[in-house]
Length: 86
Image (cartoon, rainbow, N blue to C red; front, side):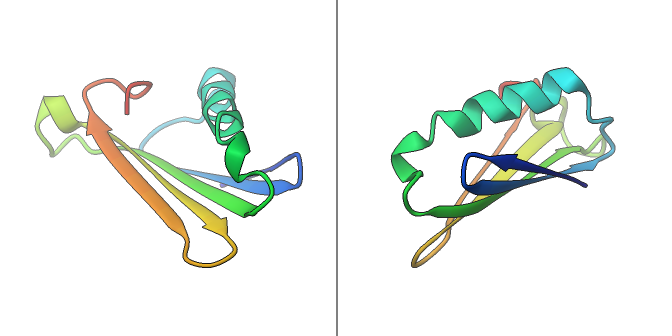
């Protein structure tokens, strides 16, 4: 698990069966920066990336994001054959 401070928001990165590289970290930071319209309300973001070899190859990589904001949290999840696409 890696903790990063992005502006006023705390970012927590977790991985399952994937080595967290600088390229993956930078890609996630670039995507989180695009959520700047939530900047005023976002408290923290929890990102989990995983590689599940038991799933079909088209859904082998997964990424889930939980964005903690004032009020109900926002959650998104996707699975794809490419980690960066997920």
